Structure formats: structure tokens, C-alpha cells
Length: 249
Ligand code: G3P
Ligand code: MG
Image 1 (cartoon, rainbow, N blue to C red):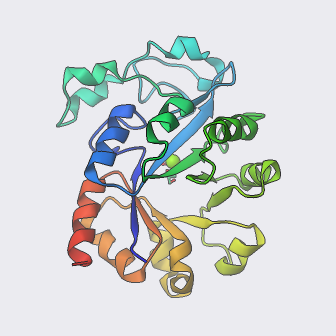
Image 2 (cartoon, helix red, strand yellow; image 1 turned 90 degrees about the horizontal axis):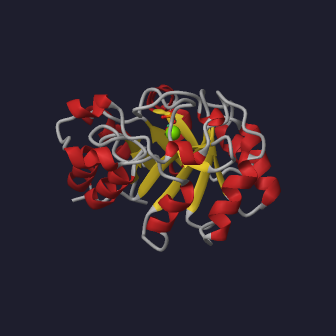
């Protein structure tokens, strides 16, 4: 199996993270999958953003949890993006996407969607139901893999629909990872590059069930291709895709 390339928050190294612009550019680069992060607004709408607050990536501030959707709809990207090499003032039109807007754009496209529920640093009662509802209303359950650092979130999703594909973002390699995957009915384990390299021997036999983040250095790509991991998650999809195309000549 050919290792897939997933754009992390779109193509976060080059374009504003978790924006439609970044997702569009990542798809143009030829990625196989998009990794996005989701939170719940005060009025329980699912929005695509990484942090629990607006502060780092947008022109506003405050917790997502305490902000209503309509209040977010006029917020632009953070000033820091002006220092990005490719910046131009059309970027200022980007807004925080809602999950349904994002999914509508990629419905029926040949792109895997990895929706990461950010339920570790913030408590969002009912987020699993809301996210599941958005994805299933668009009939995209088969195209989406849900991930989280919070195992309980994945259990809650499975309880809603046992056919959903879930992946655990583990902060360490679980003891006996193959058995762990079976026990929790996981589609994959999402592990950090360092953890994978540290336990390379042990992980080789389940390599296809691994998605590895965050692979932003050229020298990190080849060892993962040689190992045959399921996917590489990167802020620089263009770079990883280039190395992959040379590897599979
Ligand atoms: O899904 C991989 C990666 O996105 C997990 O960490 O903090 O970038 O969401 P984070
Ligand atoms: Mg993420």
C-alpha cells in the first residue's frame, strides 16, 4: 500500500491553518487527505479551528466555547499571516469555516477527511452528537475518520454509530499496539514521529494502521515510506508529495 499524505490543518506551513484557502491549496497540491480540528461554539455549532481560543490564529480573542457563531463570522485571520511568503490581501477574506461548509466542498471528492475533535483541553458536552449529525446529514460517514486525544470521545462516537471509523491520537505508543487497536475497535493509531521512530521495530507489523504526525522535515519522510505507514500528516504536503513521488518511481 502506498503511504498517503494528509495536509495538517490544510497546508499549515504555507497557508493560514484550518481555512478554506488552505484546504483548497492542499487539494491542488494533490494530497490524499485533509486533517482538520473542530470545536463547539457557545450556540453549539461545529467550527473548524485548532485552539480553544481565537487569539493565535484570528484577528479577535476569546474562548470558542464562549463565542456565538454569528460573532465569529466577521473575524479575519491573524496579522501574523502577513509574514507568510505567499501572503496577499485576498487572504483577509478568510473566515473560520463551519464543519458543514467545509464538508460540502469536499463531498464526493477523492479526499479522506480526518476530523479531530478537540476534547482534551476543553470540555464540550454533546460535541460528538453535533459532529456526527453534521457528517451523517451530508452522508459522509464513509469518507470521514474521526480522531481525538480523548479516548472517551471515540467511545461516544462509536456508541452513536458503531460503523464510524475512529483513530486514537495517543501520546505514547500503547503497550501491545496491535491488541490496543482491536480492543478499542480503532481504524488507526495516530502517533508522533518521535514515538514511531523510537518503537519502529515493534510498530512495523501494524505500519499500515498508523498515521504519523507531524512530519515537517525532509529527512523524516523516507524512513516512514520505507516502513510503509498508512499516512504521513504534514504542514508541508508539497514537500512530502515530492519525496513520495521520487520514492515510488
Ligand atoms: O492529528 C494530528 C495533529 O493534528 C494532532 O495535534 O495539536 O496539531 O491538533 P494538533
Ligand atoms: Mg489536529
